[in-house]
Image 1 (cartoon, one colour):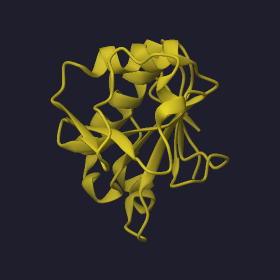
Image 2: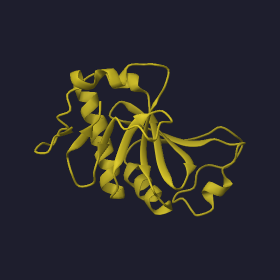
Image 3: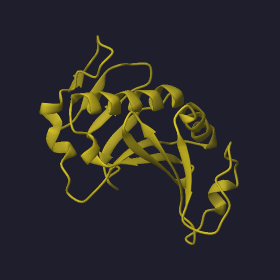
Image 4: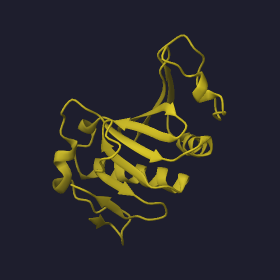
Length: 161
């Protein structure tokens, strides 16, 4: 159901989708599909305004910026790279699993009210506008299941309960 066509806010009401953010032991994923290094660098450049922490779970070097074509080949099963940033009180973790999809995850327990939901939808729109691709919010590791989808240059969001 598309909502928010004539508004700056999502107009997706928290009370209508509250169950999507209940904790069942799993994160929620944000996906941009069919990407390249170009979209990755566009997203990372747009997110620079937020406090971004490089995180690495190994003894390997930090994440380069901008990303280069060899970066994804250098990540291995021995290292997990990610960047974490705070978007208006929502911790967003940026994972570098493949250059073919931009992936973030969030803790659904941080979406506790209408203001947090509006901030999350705003983030989805930011990513969509920067990449000029649709952005999907989905249950963790469930790429084929869409909770919310946003399109570039639109304030509308498609909620799929």
